[in-house]
Length: 81
Image (cartoon, rainbow, N blue to C red):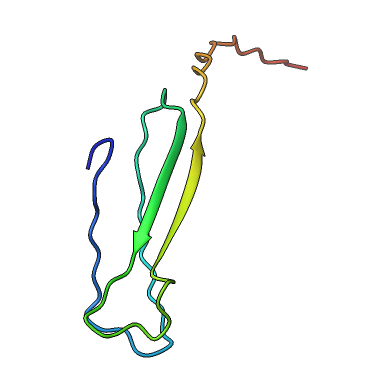
């Protein structure tokens, strides 16, 4: 989706008092840092019994990964008795 965008999900039907779980996995550049904010909004053609609880947000901190230290070749020694 890029830096910002909408990822639509749908479920054909949800019974009364039933929930639905959708999982979103994002790939972030290793040098990125800051926050990723996700806002979810549910909608239905059926009248909501408890209006006001159709959305929620979550923020996740992203910390840049420091550059890795390259592997160092270590000579191998064998001890013979």
